[in-house]
Image 1: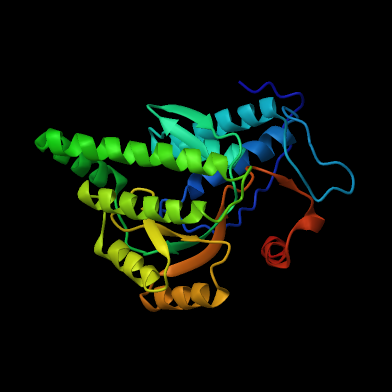
Image 2: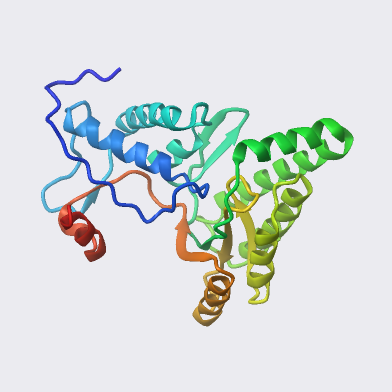
Length: 278
């Protein structure tokens, strides 16, 4: 429990987000993490890490743990029985390993450039999970090896990601691209694919890029890996073709830092404009 050192002042909270809701991108967790960090700071339960003149600052490890535990409560209010992965990523950033309910942050991971594409096809995680379970019960001898293979892909990917920061060699990218492709085929086999995601993969493949679904599948979002040497023209052409499919597309990064306190002077014009409209 949070022992507040003084009364919480009455506050107006303005939320501004570029993340689409309900697309499997963890926007509810991002909201819960920011809200927990803001309220804990406001009531003095955690320190204000920002020093005079600094643009941004992050909290100490034990304070992040407190932020994460409250954000998880927020996720429980929104989702009922969440895994805790989304709020943990939002709090610590970087990359995490999730296995049998256990969350382990990866020590060092590179920043990976990606295209994030929203197919805008709505889906129900609950229905998709039920479908996978049904297939597993119907064909255990076929499905269990597929799940083992998906696990092996995750482990292989983890070792590649952990090797990259110490040795930023371009030879890792073809390996990640191949793992993306194999993983996407496996996800289709277990029944969480969708024609819109197949289309996304075909469109990006025509530009020499490799994609896979992210989140629950059945529509929702996909990610496309961009190599450091991917030409800006190829990226622009891929984005144009994806938008022509009626998809929404952003260029972003995987492995960014987690929850951060920003001074108002460090915010970009778009955010400041959104905040000033309140």
